[in-house]
Amino acid sequence: MKLVSEGKAKIYVPSESLTKKSETFYNPGMEHQRNITVAALRILGPKEVLDPLAATGVRGIRILREVENVEKVVFNDANPKAVKLIEKNLKLNRIKKSKYEVQKKDASSLFLEKNKFDFIDIDPFGSPVRFLRNVGYALHRDSILAVTATDSGALAGKFARACFRRYGVFVEETDFSKELGIRVLITSILQNLATHDITFEPLYSHANHYFRTIGLIKREVDKNLSKIRMISYCPKCHSKMIGIEGKCDCGGEMSHIGPVWTGKIQDRDFIRNLLSKFDFENKKEIVICSEEIDQPFYYDIHKMAKSLRKGPPKIKSVIDPLRKRGFKASRTHLCRTGIKTNSSLKEILKIINF
Image (tube, rainbow, N blue to C red; front, side):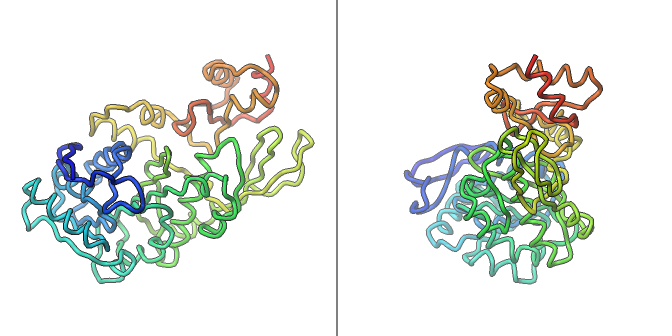
């Protein structure tokens, strides 16, 4: 065992804790997403929290130590070694027993119990799909839900068959792979929650070697389901549009992706509030997200330039001319070389070709 510090928590973690075979999983690379979670909960103010796949307990301990108004955190893990470690870490952080409960159950079964929570965080090793089927039983219509997926190859289009098996979505490799992964994940959340007559409103979504989204549970089920659509995508010129088209203007054959969520994946006002609630060490991604326009699907400018056999332009040299022509345009936090815009593809190509 080794002792590590994260946020205001100190925890013991196994010396080897980054593989599925580890006694208990702990990934220091996920600290950034836990920072975002803490900041989000400072804004949203939940009282009853469930960490159904708690592992070392770091997330729940940080919530108890860093978020006011939280009255209780239920830590759960089916692994008995994880349960012992959670209890050890709770004692290490001197958390009052009245503030927590530790259980050793299968997460999907735990959701079926009568308890309802203000915040549930599903953060598994791999796909979260099997936990999404039952989580609606443990949510009320003003709850907060966060979901992480680490099966990035399937979600981003590299392993299309695996994505269809797990999520029921046709995908392929595109120039907007990280946004595609986020949208497939949100699609699965929406479809599973709809069976409980509730829906999901994303507040912040981000991607690294994983995909994650956090949002509010709402009632407008049919309204959100109507935004799950098929997408037409041209692998040749990277054109993309909502709906089914056969031929692209460039002459290439359109591929069809979906059905997938086409609504918002974040709330800019909420993200600006995030920045005021937490001193992020690396906040560039969040700042970009706070300025990002609400437009589905980014264009990877470097990939487009490569297709045109052009040198990669500076992102600013594409965004500024688009804005001067009256279009909305911004960077995207999901891709260092990507832009979002409501202009046509032809306008982008004119600028790159100059």
